Length: 363
Image (cartoon, rainbow, N blue to C red; front, side, top):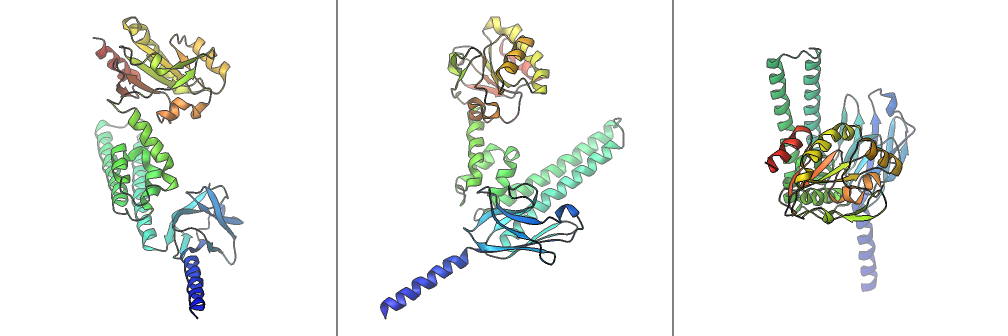
């Protein structure tokens, strides 16, 4: 009898575990948007980067239901690879309804109601800013200064409201997956200190979606003012290996310049870089160019054409350059100024700002 009761208990427990991981997502397009009248929609795991489920339309409704590990961040997409996102949400064991009408509505659990409220606040701010852009466009490039100041003030006020909604939404949801979603999507604007402090005791700080966030934090900390530079090693144009420490921390200022031959803004900026090199190299100033090219000839031809006579390094891995990843370089041109003691002085100096800074240092 005891064995029977124990077996029944285990069986019921197994069923309960499955029930806790059961999802149901329905999607309906009421908007008349023909681009959303697709043959198949997909339930995509944002964290796992793979489709969980799919469905075809039956009587105007797409229905997906089954079992998976819950909760997780997910989206309804028009493609199996996660592109053409229709709506994102926290997939849990409460039924979720995605409806596209005049806008996009996601209904389901309380967590999803909170997530949609944050999204709505950010989107409303975006619409308001687009209206300001349209207002400015009416002047055909002859915007009066008084109007420009007014529009700038309104723009900043909207941006402040968006940021407050974003940060409040993250701070007030430490017990669910909402912060992971918004930190991942807005990590570039939230700031290192805010993200770093929040993640210390966040329940889902180990969520897979935050992997790149931690890489960003590490990279930004490495180039923070006052940090000691972190070394890397790359080949030069002849294939000889060089470390950053071969140049930096030797008693002089060193500018690490991330660029590429295919980068138009990099080429536009190069005369400024060359100007400070020509003026101050005799005083000990050095530049180390790090190219994000993947074509050696394009790289070496550009160096010759632009008369870049300072050390040039590249592993020819483009954005996967080990140096670029180390310092989380996601746009170029980008610079890192290292002091005589090997400490970071500044980052991302360009144009007049770069020239002024080097002039100050060598006064």
